[in-house]
Amino acid sequence: MQDNHLRKIYVSVAILFAAIITMVLVIFLVIIPIVKDSAKLAFLDILVAPVDASVTIDGEDYNNAVYEMEPGHYTATIARDGFKSVTVDFDLEKNKTAGLYLYLEPSDGDWGYYELAKNQASMEALLRLNNYNNDGEEWWPEVVPIQEKDGAKAMVEKYKVKAILPLNVSLCGEVATRMTCNAVKVEYKYAKKCGDSLCLVISGRSKELPSEALSEIREKFAEGGFDFGDYKYIYVQDSRI
Image (tube, rainbow, N blue to C red):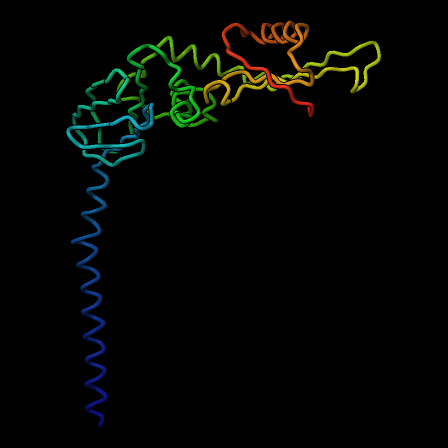
């Protein structure tokens, strides 16, 4: 009986010893090589606009995301129907992150594609690529310089009008009451009456936009450094204003 007890102890010790040996082998043969290999990787942060553009790097497809890649030389092609494709060469270094940041130019030169409501994600990417409202986000060193297109820059400058909006204008008679005052509100947003695109939406209590209100809006835009003439707008009657 004592021999059986000793035999069980020996078996338990042998199993424990085998488990320890197996664990050590896993660490040296599997985990350590993986860690060493990961230390040799490079990282690529991709952000392109439109967001549904195809990104092909050395024959492989990629999206807007961060990827682990082997260090070395690469060729990337970014393309989408209706846009001018871009092909760039770049190098990635081990243990470093680099950014592939660029946006495509519409083939017909009409940047209005980015202003459509259905393309809002692409507009947001375009704004980020032009350093608008990044909230202190860190940009990795670019593998190719972000191109600066006048059409994109002009669109971003237009979008900055949101800094002074919404704008409220009140036109009152001699006695200022809700009945004698005509209130007008100006917003920059997507509207179906603008073809589901970004535009100025001016709403007010009266049936038509008073010329006095329009003059004051123009003045407010000029004070903020914006040209009201650069924007398309619609007027909507709204008694709740």
